[in-house]
Length: 338
Image (tube, rainbow, N blue to C red; front, side, top):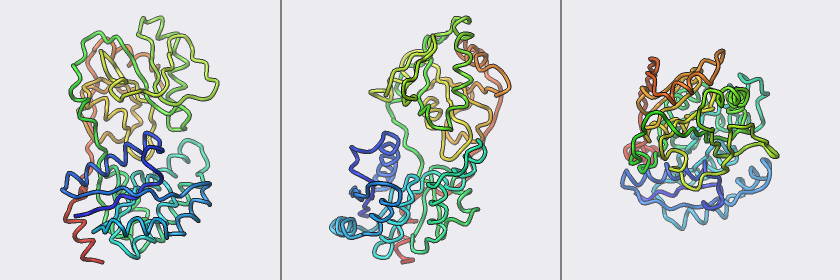
């Protein structure tokens, strides 16, 4: 089966998170035996400008038609204008939309953190609720699929298209105790990370007093950020393995929201222990005997200390709900339904 994957812009110009999701889409389809071709939509500008670009279908339509696809997958990745584009492409092709993260959960997360829901997730909710031609929707987790289905945002079949994990992570040598390195990899400007990060910053002196290794930060930090002693800002990691190599423990700064905590999944795949907030209600992959849960009403330095020392972890159990994974059968059924 020949599948065109429509992306927002040339792959090289996309942010690392979007590139990772597109790789997951392409690798999953190729794992099903599909031949894939990427087509950049060329939309640009503000939210309104991108929506107008998506409605001017001709350049994207011509590029997709030239590939003679059996099906089209639009890599939506929380972009409302790509919902518009997917619905318009669905007039001419069997089209699936990879929503990735639930729109409903994005809105709920902002409200839960005291943020007024922003225009982007609101627009996503309104636009996807109006879709009628899209042949199917894929999500990063069963939790995300269930949330949008319950919110009435899916007019067709839903399936999971799981996040791909770099196979090289599993090849890293196991850690030895005590740990000699601590890392955080996150967008520390995003509201989904700022709360946990504030606790870490406030306890930087305590962690130094405990003799813990410096905490290395990979990713985005606020402009003109001055790190307290004991915290070292590294910038973007040149390779994913850089975050996890050596005798490393990982501190996950996510709070509940949409999608999945990628850094936790990657750390567990690499055999690295992690510290994470016990408010996270979803851990869809990996063993949980390496997770040191932190309660937000207690010092975060304590589970970090326990992780470095290799002390036993507490008990917990999360079960990912069963949900169908995108298959050739689903693509074929969408084709027949058309």
